[in-house]
Amino acid sequence: MAKKAVATLQTGEGRTYSKVIRVVKSPKTGAYIFEEEMVPNEQVKAAIAK
Image (cartoon, rainbow, N blue to C red; front, side, top):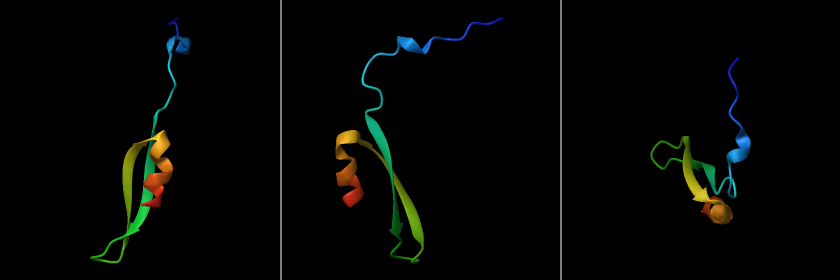
């Protein structure tokens, strides 16, 4: 049988970036589109407020 890799070898903070997905209304068609961006965890609130 094969051995599983041990996940305890990871060190560090973990996730430092978050994906922010915003719904924006298109000026051309009036349809809603999704804008995605990766931002550092400290800047999530500022990215949502845009």
